[in-house]
Amino acid sequence: MAWKDKMKEWGGGDLTFLSSDGEVIMFVVVDEPVLLTGKYKGNPQERIGCPVVTDEGFVLFVTGKRTARKLSKFEERFKDAAFMVVRKGESGDINSKYDVTILDNKTKTEQLFALAKKEYKPGMLKQAIADATEVMKG
Image 1: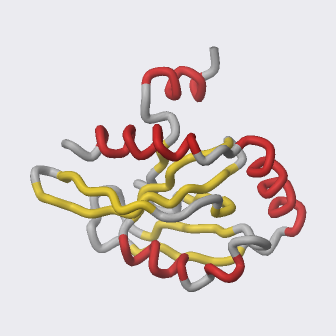
Image 2: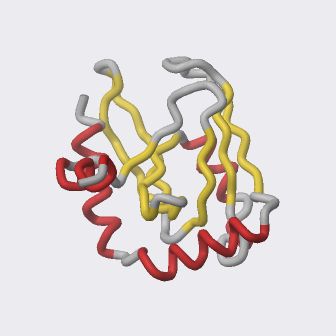
């Protein structure tokens, strides 16, 4: 069994975060965003769950409101464009910045849309939300 499959079996395999400086995610948006509430180091927090498909399939990309707002500016392109988000800031830095851009790679964009069409089902979002809520209880 692959790592990815084991993580899905154990829970949380359908979530992703950008937690290191320079970390990148490339994706297509496949559903509506979800407001997630929880705690981080004992403090209440709100995060946005962005349902996306990456090279590895469906994941709930959990990010801050600023990043989700940046992504929302491209909403009219969700049906024809893939996106790239890059973290700029060390792990644990609450002032990290996230660059959100349209992916300038036609082949990769087509691959991601084909994968999304084949793999994503709206019911997958419910489990991802439950997993994210569990992770954010901390």
